[in-house]
Image (cartoon, rainbow, N blue to C red; front, side, top):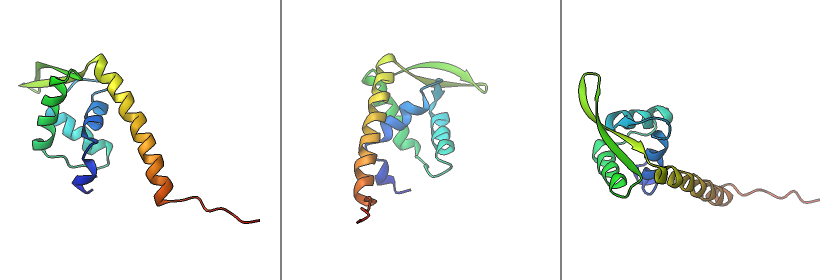
Length: 111
């Protein structure tokens, strides 16, 4: 997948994988790959700055936890992050519908 296609959607993708459980950074990357059937290969240099930014803006919170015997920072959605995720989903549906109507217009059948 073209990395430029992800521009502007990374926040929603990260919020979505954190919706049901807290995860550490690498687990977030793995979840993105799994949910996309391997189509999304997001570099750590993209995910970690986004996580820090989302935390600064109050959409995520983080704690240190021991995962697999290693200390890792785990991230979880805040209530504000949950609201933002719903907004991201709504915006995505609208965007997808508009672009779809241009790329795949419905053909009218003439009587």
